[in-house]
Length: 176
Image (cartoon, rainbow, N blue to C red; front, side, top):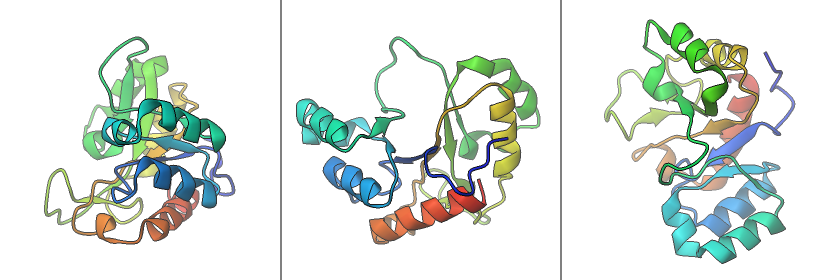
């Protein structure tokens, strides 16, 4: 399994994790924090304008690890820990997906949870064995980014996005 403890190169921030930020703020905030990969949702790309978005992304040397958009060429599997952690056949299903895994989303399941969609936890705050799932994904051949995608209406979305990014980095290095 890859060592993430000293390296931000494989960390990607999904725009929903810092929902208060525009695309420009996401790019600049991640750049300030030394993160070079993002996964913007279509709405903030459209609000920015596709041409301007491309210029901003290239100007900051960002890698786009995903875009929540319509299916097209290159469709594959995104393993999102929030949605699969409980599956007793997870190891088998991840192995079956193998090279079709194009994305790996990290977050945590809180106990108790107050909302099935909008109460995702920061990695390490819940019950998901993130290292075990990452080991399965990497054993299947995945070598891409670990994309932090936390939908959290009552906690993480209410915090300063710079603080959220700082904690994402810390947890990526210590928990994921």
